[in-house]
Image 1 (spheres, rainbow, N blue to C red):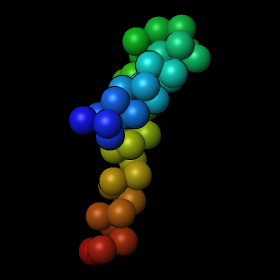
Image 2 (tube, rainbow, N blue to C red; image 1 turned 60 degrees about the vertical axis):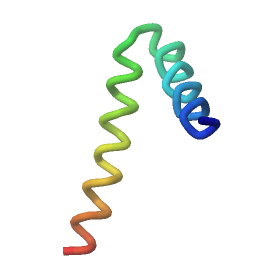
Image 3 (cartoon, rainbow, N blue to C red; image 1 turned 30 degrees about the vertical axis):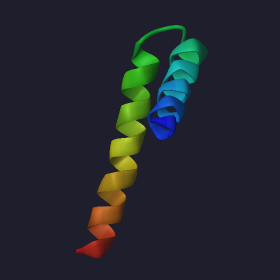
Length: 43
């Protein structure tokens, strides 16, 4: 549960920085890009 809270806090920080919920979407996109890079390296 603590991990989920820290992730939620980070998302909230992003949304506050960008002053919009889009900050959350951007954060998710950045995380997805990191995951994609990891899977590409494995291939």
